Image (tube, rainbow, N blue to C red):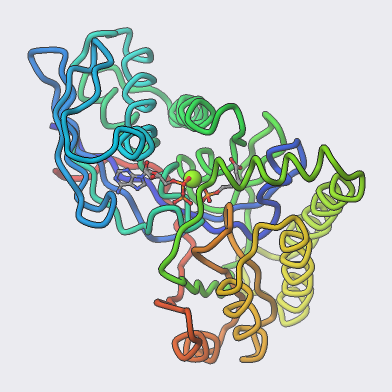
Length: 338
Ligand SMILES: Nc1ncnc2c1ncn2[C@@H]1O[C@H](COP(=O)(O)OP(=O)(O)O)[C@@H](O)[C@H]1O
Ligand SMILES: C[C@@](O)(CCOP(=O)(O)O)CC(=O)O
Ligand SMILES: [Mg+2]
């Protein structure tokens, strides 16, 4: 039995645009998905995912035939829910060169689903790591990231960047531009997350942006402007001392860029009333800046504030269900005691 865990993330800058080759800077946060994998004698895959959907469920199906599990919900819902787990199992089998390996898989996660904190990437990364280890065929962390990207790419119909999966596998802050993935050093940023209790569908939101971008040249310009914001942001981070507390000037400038980034994401149609309400509430409370994080449509915002003010304001914001400080997680994927 092998258990691996991997962190979720927030985007400081650059979600969506990163799908089209612009750079992005996600930061891993101390909210993790844990996946326990036990190899089986047969080629079946049994998945226990209690955090999945409202009530969670357990299914067993024959992974070799591609038969769907026999459960009393529409199969499209099961496919949507199981897509990432299925794709990660395929990647783990391929990496271990064991196409018929069967597994008992248990997924536990502190990361809300579909909320922009990268639950899919964390589950896929932890699953690939644990499954390959359980077959005595461990792979390097960068290869876990690569396989996890291929799983997300498959599930999101070819519309995925390497950002979420690389960040979850490596931990810390990272910079991703196309296939170029690097870890970067940043000062400890005072990250606050607000969560509206909702979710957005990553595939659908990415398709919406793609359509706008293909229809309007100004939407394509908006995507490249997001890239400009990220380049500006990474310069600020590169010039700062990662071992010192972030300066007031750095936080002010990063906040301004985050505000701008949110405006452009909003123009691309991926914000929502509750995300906007949380963003404004954070700004009114004195946050340096605030933006939605991840695919959008509902879910989470990320703000910078060293004081408790933003958290307090968010907790009183209608539509905000939870607000918490998110520490940067320097640990990416790691093995856990089962
Ligand atoms: N705890 C979990 N157990 C099983 N699958 C999960 C879990 N968390 C996330 N997933 C998978 O990830 C999907 C959500 O991913 P996505 O829409 O990309 O949102 P995000 O990555 O922002 O959370 C879920 O529909 C499910 O397939
Ligand atoms: C919108 C996007 O840039 C980020 C999606 O993040 P999340 O799955 O909502 O956490 C898509 C991607 O990079 O694959
Ligand atoms: Mg995701």
